[in-house]
Length: 141
Image 1: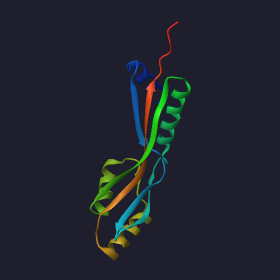
Image 2 (image 1 turned 180 degrees about the vertical axis):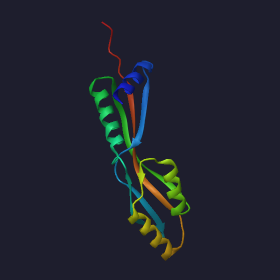
Image 3 (image 1 turned 60 degrees about the vertical axis):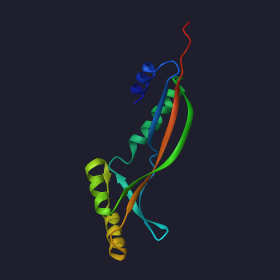
């Protein structure tokens, strides 16, 4: 990743910016909103334990410490993936998130919730960080 960031640095204009957006690596939550409350039914697991997000953070830290980039701004936000029911959300994740693991406990909790309250909207909540990095140019001597 560091090599890619170094190449991006070389391609940016003198006043160029790199915008990095990636999840923080905190556990992703399955949430049922119901009657003004939110019910956590479990967490999404990943086969690689979210390692790529830590690697991305380390790569950004390295290019900043090398003096190639300067952090202008960094902020976290919540990103929700909505679905009209758990089965559709699970199908979406199975088709699109290759590292995603939905545990049997989460499936059982979803089925119990739907048995008690009917099939209803559900969402996946994850924390994401966006960082704006300014390319730093060393003066030519």
